Length: 118
Length: 114
Image (cartoon, rainbow over all chains, first blue to last red; front, side, top):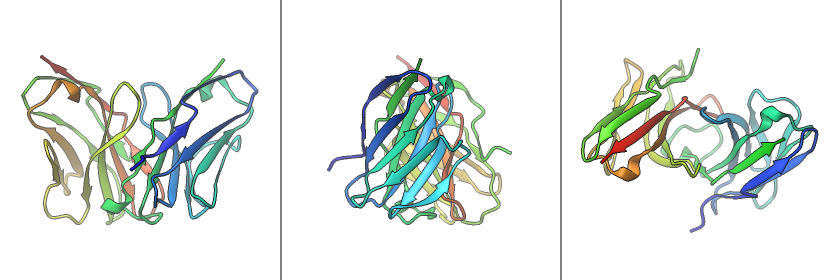
């Protein structure tokens, strides 16, 4: 079975540009979460979507937005890119209900998109 | 306050030896899950092991076991018989029933020495 897939794998943008990152969850998973991981740190939560609705949002500015499609895939958009947005962006899917903390709520991560802002 | 604290930025272990990676957590939610992930240099986060707050037994998955001490709010990962391929960053994470996100620690870099 295919795991979580993300595209593109690498991206280089300049300040002020906009970027769209894509994620496809594991088949049957309805929840997708996005994380930003700056070099040398742990992942920071950006968004969670479940059944196409936003269920959680981390402490990120409004330049960050996301959406989930009927097939449960998701896009993360970042506008007006800053140098500090350079990071690894991770997508994770879970088969459990949003807000659960059981073993079925384990998040499985994709390989990430490495964004570099120049 | 930090939800997850990993106090060991870097650890070294001899091949075939056991190693313990420390993790403490902070929550007032009675129901939560604790997770450990491995992140090789390639970047992908690989799920290793899960422990629920109501689980009576410590979780085990192959060479991985979780030393869960609820009263001390600690969830240390024990890797037995270390292998060279275990060299990676290791992250402890927690999810509360009341919330919709995973909280990650800052990670521990493990290096296995031949």
